[in-house]
Image (cartoon, rainbow, N blue to C red; front, side, top):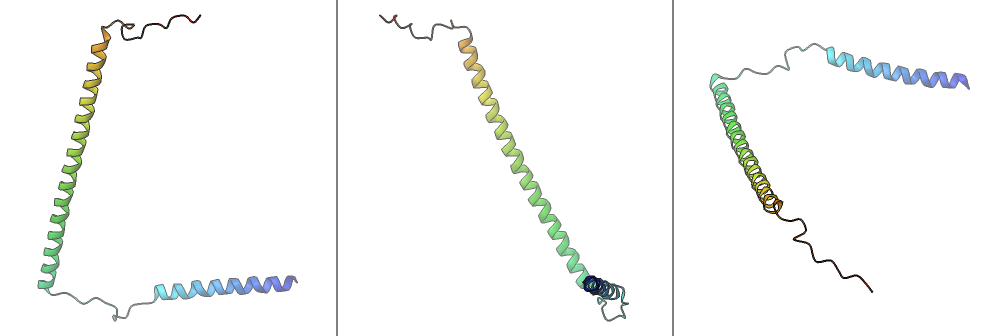
Length: 112
């Protein structure tokens, strides 16, 4: 019984070791020149550089527009909060000098 378990473990370990070995060989295999990128012509490089510049300018413009929209929204929110606070302060000030009992209903007559 124990001999069977050892063989399974040995086979499993050998399989893992073989897989690691194959991956290691494939990773470290030298390149013999068939897998090299070809050099681009200067005109192609200029075209790519122009496209990159245009993309960078477009992204910067979009970022500025998004930032301006966010700033406007934040200013509008702050203005609304300020108006609400001013209205609340005015209401508190209006009722602060009044008699606290003036706005209350007359007490109900005692029940008989």
